[in-house]
Length: 209
Image (cartoon, rainbow, N blue to C red; front, side, top):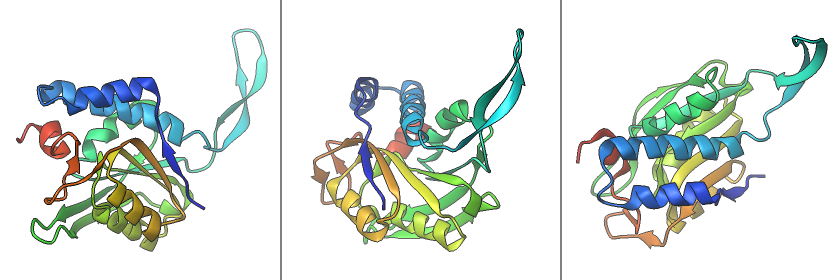
């Protein structure tokens, strides 16, 4: 059964407050997204399996734990999810990276897909699906459906800010996944933007405001 984990570490909350500030520039915004993502991933990957291997220290041989199995797949939802990827790769450089491309219809707010490429074999990996904002939940839910259709099983979704509406949809559509959230905001406005939020995460990460 899936869980919702609010990663409320003071460092994460401090950095999210800096993200919200409309005066935070592109370079600083991008760096903050990477730092928050790495801190969240530290928590999300707490249950990775390990196995004891023999290592020779400068003094003697010993058995010591290292990651086992096929390890990790990082799957950002394009384009804003790309901003979270590098922070996690700094933590786990050996992770494989896939991509899912979705866009939200400006009128219906429903997601439409245009690209999906996943590491193989996806069914043997712990999968981190990334999107800074969980607004309506449509894109996240659709992306996770794609991954399941390709054989993905152990799926975790990571976002920085979520709206209650998006969280409820994701929990309802995919009750088996783990959801990691930096902060749960108040609501969506009439244009399906999160309030108070931080604006359009993709535009602020890539400087296309």
